[in-house]
Length: 500
Image (cartoon, rainbow, N blue to C red; front, side, top):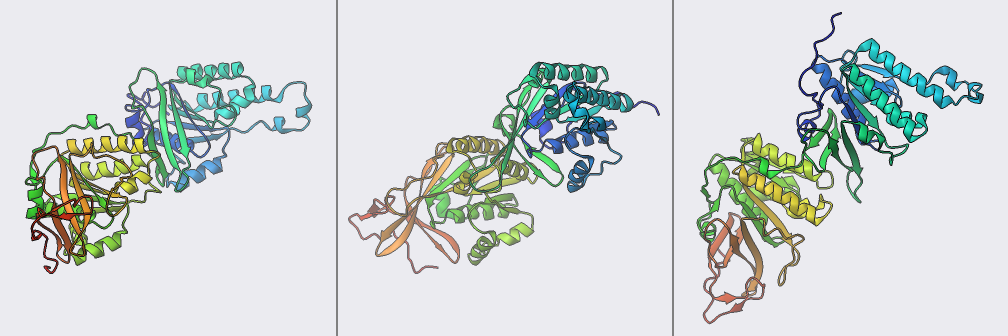
């Protein structure tokens, strides 16, 4: 049988997103280290690495010192992979003589014999198959057999030089169970990738990875979220907004409510972000839906990411107001995603948003609300950094973004769980106020970077026909504090509560 042609270019890992983090994959004929505690996904990534090579016509060899062939086969079956002809799994068992009780009484240390036998068996497999890609699972077994750090390092160096002479790209797995403080392999390996699993106080576990080093290669630094699902590992590279610059035409978008557009100085600009602040029940979601419907009228696509409200209830509620969101979804003009903050990592959420903008060509994006998004973040500062990159990315793609934040309290001083008003291009403030023995709602625009806006306060009402915005409230002061005082006059600028 003729030898396969020498592979060229980088060795892709076949893991969605990971090749992007690594700048294209692995440089060939080098030795790499993939480390992480048990259950972080090392075996799955290693199998994907070999299967990607098999798809490119490269021979792959999986040498297992810790898992049995049946266990590996079970893993592959769970992902729907067929590996019988794609790669070779070599289950390296200790020699039977070393398991004999009489041999344990020998003056020779059994670990010396096992290490020699193990190395010899590995070399025999390489000589026989001449694989282009090799996975060695795991280093913990070799570290235990070596006994001390010096001997362990020399053994790894010997393996490295041997693999290099045979033109193999090698991935070493380390489960960090024997001595996680030993960094001998870090200095020997061409690149080191660490996998981590975090267990929040509530919700599913979170997984992330980081490239600790990669000689002679630029890579995407920092932590990157990833998940393990049927079909393998998927990595969500950290979003860097500066890498995504596009040109688009700036336009002023109407909401379909003339008084609201007048309050905003004529509308909201494309490629900008709008933050809608207010206590619960003031209609923050309804205002964003008004812009979604207006986008559909223009023939543009929108994407809504709903954290707080149950999707069926929202569709039913808005349907009663005349907003047929289900119909827009069926026509392909709207994508509505129910987001469970306890199950979704921030990196995966950013990936979902990017996919709607890049692939589905959504021009209007609604995130409702940041209170739910914050629950997915480990700390407030991380939320601000994530939102900065996400908003900058959406702005550079020409998408118009709407975010909502539910403030604590109903009247008087309001507190927001996180302050991102400085990130948004436009900030709309919603408030309750009492007048004539009724609880009413007021809206004002307190910030707009792109153009002028009214500095007035307008009353608005939510009814069976949706949103109605009235004339500026000039007969009161103290409305935004929730305790208005009637100025000289009769307050005729209040909206008629009997109107539909």
